[in-house]
Length: 391
Ligand code: APR
Ligand code: PHB
Image (cartoon, rainbow, N blue to C red; front, side, top):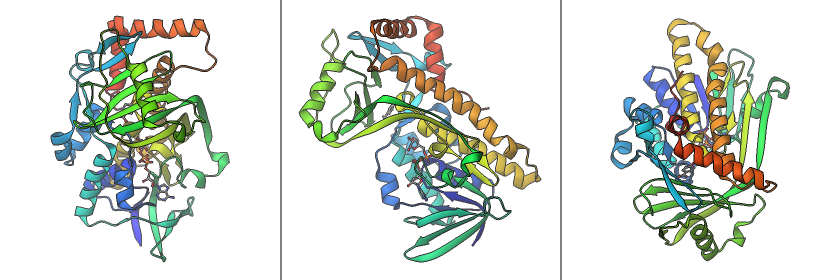
């Protein structure tokens, strides 16, 4: 089989890329390790920046998002038992965020792909990329025991942090920048209406907690825990008791409880692989970078990458010019590092660090106090949270 762009991975990066390329008249083949059901059902992020939402709507895949997505114009920072609202829309000239689960976004894009009749392979085994430095890099894989080979002009690595595309680049051609954090997030999905209309980022001496949501009947909650902790140590009543302690306010705010239908512990890391291109292999999304989830940026950054990659490929096929392709890594990385900075900043402002001293704690509270009392500081948080403008 021959195609213009071979896409490895059918998560948000891979499926948005396939969609944008199709609209630009560029052929692609998508190859995904997991089943379609698995990709859509795994519990992932749920906050769309204004630009991510706009891209879905402007490119004709936003109907369900417009119907079921929940628009938020603000968020809450809670610390010292007090509630402080950041008015995102007021601070950003009317921008907002949309709550829409990542699985639903991937479903919309996958439905659009399947409607085009263009090739997409799920449950592919032994996926490998070959001849990356030739004019026809190739993806080989098995489906139902049958071998497939796709010869491409370009390969897009969209296969997440544990995928194979980044590791197929010679180690000497990549520089890795990394930070791991001395804590993790225990996340739950509970069948109960959200306890607040907006997201709550909560700083507490027992550790960070976050109140989010998926639908009007499903609440998503997180609490900071030890990175080596075992989910078996967290029976439901311990989780609720810990959440109640951390979210407690001076005015008696109540957290809605309900059956926990999913729980898990996620480690936190910041990671960047540079450059985001090796010969005819272009990387996007989690396979090139990971951010800690405190800024809600992973999904949005993946979408911003493929937006740039699709325009660079469109220019190449339209005019034969390599200019945008040659700038792809550099241009993407400017946004990646700004988002890394923001995600690190939110993380360090809101979490308990094991070796912090009383000076660090006072400084953290002063930072929260500043962000919630200075319009300039709040505006900086807000413009990053709703999404920086595209280059
Ligand atoms: N071959 C083919 N596909 C693979 C392989 C492989 N060897 N390895 C992994 N994949 C698939 C995964 O099964 C997954 O469906 O690649 C896809 C990568 O999707 P994501 O991990 O969602 O990464 P990305 O599309 O970059 O989106 C980033 O998703 O994981 C969240 O927090 C992350 O929100 C961020 C966003
Ligand atoms: C989520 O809803 O899963 C979520 C929301 C905000 C974050 C991270 C995760 O910062």
